[in-house]
Length: 83
Image (cartoon, rainbow, N blue to C red):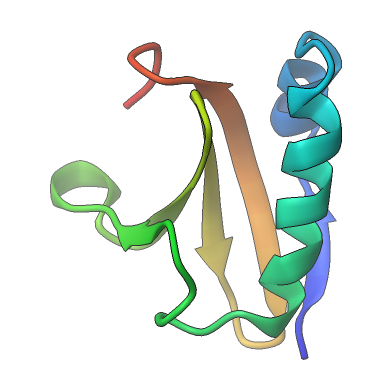
């Protein structure tokens, strides 16, 4: 079981998202506490971001890092706006 920490940048992005996506993203981020690579809609990023993962939630992407006992949400953005 991981602790979930959300960086300021992700909080700022999250506040700009409208419902119903906001509720859906929040629910999916809670599932990250039981992180495993087999969770659906999770993909390891490559290249410059290879140590990060992305969680796809509809038209949004949640970018996060997996630490020893912590999931750190780095950013949340609309599909096509990040990386």
